[in-house]
Image (cartoon, rainbow, N blue to C red):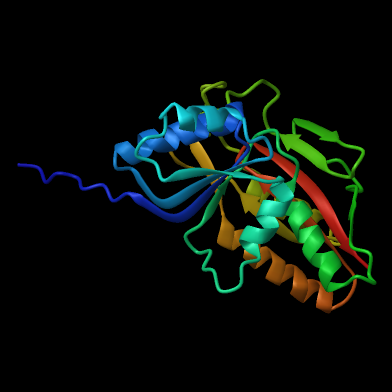
Amino acid sequence: MSTPVVRVPLTFGRIVIIGGGCYGSWYAQQLTRATRAGAIHANEVVVVDRDPACRVATMLHEGHYDGLPIRLDVAEWDDYIASWLGQEGRALSNDAMVPSPLMPHLCLDWLMARARARWPDRLPRVEALRQAPPTPWQRASPDGRHYVSFATWMCPVNCIEPRRCPHTRGVRDWSMPPFMQQFVQDNPDLHGPIIFHCSHRTHGVGMIDAAAIADADRQLAMWGAAGPCAVLVGTVSHCHGALGVLAID
């Protein structure tokens, strides 16, 4: 007789979902299903949106998330992240962020705000990449951010980026984190990289560990204390990413 497999649920302190619209409401629904299935346990799930009448608020009122310890915090994303990650004495080791596919580069913005507070006279800023990344698709934006993808097709929002790509039907032999490592090696004027990797956890929901975001600030403080630096920062999955160079004189 085979021994039954005992599945241990993923355990989190706080899960923060960015946005309470179509994406955020879907993520909250998937986390509800994962909780009911015993695949995940969280002490609290916080959805952050500046609109008190967002879709999550409506679905909360209608009871769609029963069983999930969820609440809506009405706030600007940047303000909430600064408060959450900056709480003195709060352990972030079991916290995670669920980013929205269409959100700004919030992790880079947070690092920028921290750098400006730490070195107000050194003018920390985002600079454009000096050369375009060699990915199949890439676009520079006017604010210095650069968006990259290994896909030249439209990917579904619930793709978990499995080892075999659902679109090509072949083995996925690409991944943004090692690509960023190689890009920095090929551009020795850059420090880093600082990688915020959004990876699939359960039921189609990808997350970034909050501890990784806080650790990046400590690493940036070390590089900046040693002198001028330009650091490649990326919020990425295996297939897609938002990049930026945080420069400190």
